[in-house]
Length: 231
Image 1 (cartoon, rainbow, N blue to C red):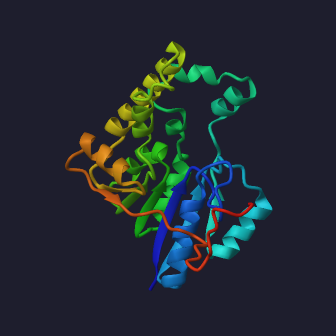
Image 2 (image 1 turned 120 degrees about the horizontal axis):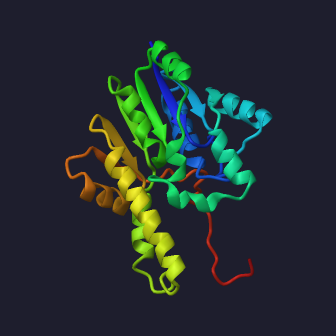
């Protein structure tokens, strides 16, 4: 009997990154299909922030043998984009994408389907794991975003202007606060960077943080690399 896994993702999985970091879940699912073809039944709920069209979504469903349901992005976020009001993000306690929510009816539908596990893709969605505390849950971050801003604040080129420094400092504060308050002990946190894993564990020393290298899709070991010839 196959196990049912529900993936909740910011972006719709695609072969290559399309307007978002969308390739990682695609190739993880592809690997599952190639190695455990009938062992897992995957169902995806996507906010589709990478704006993949209906026909392309159907092709992806066929390619991966999955079902994709589209979730609506918050209406206020669409208006911020339409009216060019993204500067208002400085008023938010957490990063903007972390305010994405799943409708109560959809949450109930997921729970009623009795999945064997929940897989969340996207650091900003880590808070959704608290809706599934009775189920095994894996959160693919895949990076620790606060580490990026922490590194930027240590670079001379990124801190020459006051506005730029304040921007990085506030983003770091937002992500670090999100990683602190949206953390849940029952979830397993999955990273594709070793330093990202280490940095996250500085905040949660006893947390379940797992490092697994990013899958190298379409890798050809026999490819000849020539540095001294025209491109």
